[in-house]
Image (cartoon, rainbow, N blue to C red; front, side, top):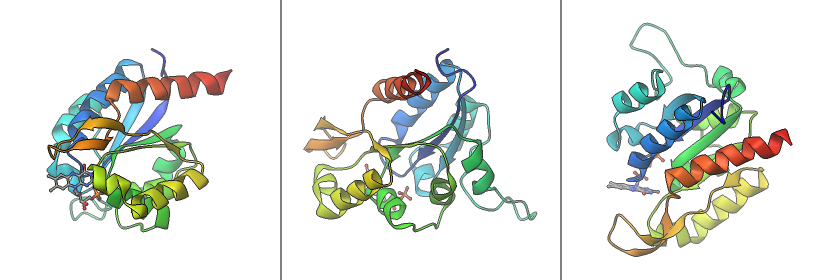
Length: 185
Ligand SMILES: Cc1cc2nc3c(=O)[nH]c(=O)nc-3n(C[C@H](O)[C@H](O)[C@H](O)COP(=O)(O)O)c2cc1C
């Protein structure tokens, strides 16, 4: 239980690699973390909130507003609750919005409100990853102090081969565990 009492926000976006987020979530829960999933509207096309809420034991947050009853989700409270926010997978679009403060969904408003360290695991096709726009946005995130978990090189969902594969969930979980253990020492 190497993540006992740790509060982690897991941000999920609209990439094929969203299915790997379920394995990451399971790994974090097994290590004792309390995990709140925040998913973009597009992310829900790739993985169902039912799977994620069953694994995390919490309702998944996606929209600003509840079901027509005036309730709303507070990105500010969520940002203060977290010890770490991990966005895995992070699409080119989300990385661009994070770099430029385009706060049009719950995930980005939570990111902008968060006081905790941020990890970003990009996932995209090789040409999207290599594009100067993506590279510039990632560089901007680095200047904000965000930790970029470099994607791997290999076979991509498109059938092409190159750099852009999201890091494996087990490797991301290990990175999170070592982040907290280094912080303690
Ligand atoms: C089948 C499919 C797979 C996609 N995979 C990716 C991906 O791996 N990475 C990426 O950056 N965009 C990918 N996209 C495009 C994003 O879904 C799109 O840019 C979306 O607006 C991202 O929204 P979000 O970042 O708010 O979740 C994919 C689109 C489709 C239709």
